[in-house]
Length: 107
Image (cartoon, rainbow, N blue to C red; front, side, top):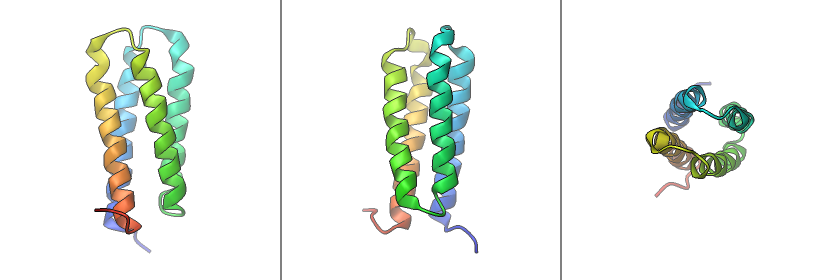
């Protein structure tokens, strides 16, 4: 069975978020932050894995990912990476909206 279009869109957004996270990780000047980035990558992966089987669980992972991004962003040492954090948060928000549309909670 094919995934609904909105779930496919959510997966696309999460992949775009992963690209932004990979760039953040490469550009980070503080190696001690990388464990948090790896944890965020794992959360994004779990969200992707659960979207089709249990969208509500995927939404929970997206909530967690948003909190993790916020923690990383607030502790960032340069404004130069702010666009990447913004891009990642926007991808999470668009994925959340797509999933909610699929489960009938969209506006």
